Image 1 (cartoon, helix red, strand yellow):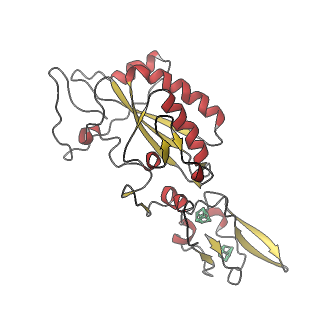
Image 2 (cartoon, rainbow, N blue to C red):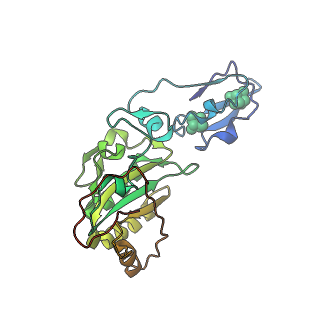
Image 3 (cartoon, rainbow, N blue to C red):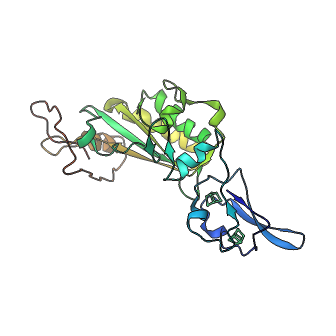
Length: 250
Ligand code: SF4
Ligand code: SF4
């Protein structure tokens, strides 16, 4: 995003709507004008879409690779061409009843890196993916972050995009339940290294008797899970269920 200095009146109304803290007022030739810091702007488009500028001084930037990634991960209306998925992650990560991605004995991990106001560089996302890869995680094929990796076995993202700043991303992976503790320990180390915030979602199937394998394992690891069920009624398709196994995961 840019500001047309010929149109800007310096009213300052756009500053508070920017969740990336990218807009500031500068004084030049005795007049106050808004300026967008191109390094901080994540190209979310919010300032423009809100119609906050009566002077119509906010002007979208023509984006070139790799800056296009800022918009892909920050503007929900932008489509990532390689996955055809609008948004930060795949649509079905939390609906195992539809996808059947996770079997018993393994868990899904959905890690939200960055938030409005915090934002994140992709270099910090890489610290998270490296931690997961070291613990044996397999990254979700259709996730935009996975598409940016040059070495999935090590969680390495291509170097030419690492400086891009985005509102947030979702890293999606699955891992054997037996290695969940290893993954959480690696993520704790990564949390000390990143200049942003992230939260960890653990996705587990539910057995017929209501037992949730991941919950007991998390408690054993000293983590109190905040249980949240998510079932898409009517959207599920039959899964192959072994005798004695029950329904599908939240
Ligand atoms: S809202 Fe428009 S006129 Fe006001 S400071 Fe921002 S860009 Fe300038
Ligand atoms: S596009 Fe988003 S990040 Fe960039 S200046 Fe506008 S609100 Fe801020």
